[in-house]
Image 1 (cartoon, helix red, strand yellow):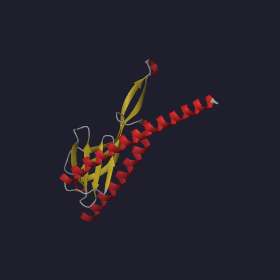
Image 2 (cartoon, helix red, strand yellow):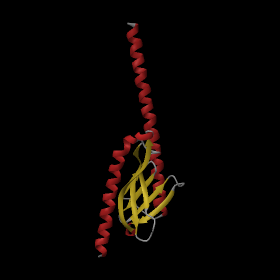
Image 3 (cartoon, helix red, strand yellow):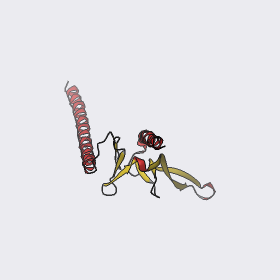
Length: 173
């Protein structure tokens, strides 16, 4: 009988420790999201924007003000740099994938394989020579198992922004 009690105590303690780890992880994720939301709201207040859509990424934050037709981009890599892009300045936006080549094999069996390094949205601007790039997937920050989800999220943004850009161009014509 005592072995059953010991086994039950071991199972109960294992379950409690697992639940504790899950709780701590969710709490830290909630804090992280609250911090990002605060950062987005502060940047929105500074630029007088009210966001109808937003996206929290590992490399930054996107916020879209549909009424003022402005996209706010916050990049974490460049000391939380904030950029406002007016949709009227965007010529086109496309999904872009960047690859690097990996050499493997030796001698005659030398092969080159492509490795996906980033997925993002590329904005070709009307009055700028250099296009803007917003990264959704970065191989240095994200797990390879997130590629499909992040690519789908990037595609959703591309379709949303493309519709808004073409609507504006039709209105001008």
